[in-house]
Image (tube, rainbow, N blue to C red; front, side, top):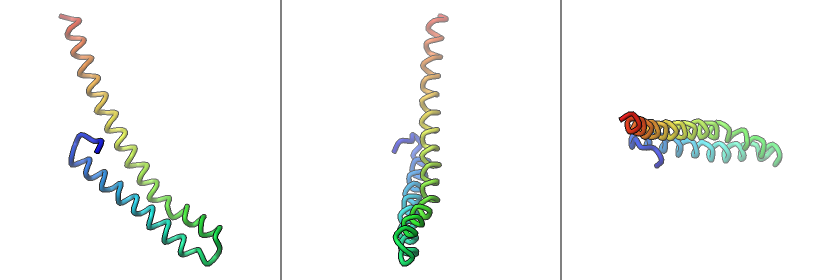
Length: 89
């Protein structure tokens, strides 16, 4: 778990698992639905069936990265304020 808030980390990791499940279910079901029309249509429909889950994964990973970036900026701000206090005193 990369997030420092345990509750938010649990929720986001749970949603990431759900998104990966949507990817697998979307790929499997769309492949089997269009397999009788030919392998090309089955592969194209598989790619299209995975898109909603992959978009959800991208959004959740972006949220995690933004939270990590904010945490690092807060740490840097504390360090810079401490340095400023040392220089001014």
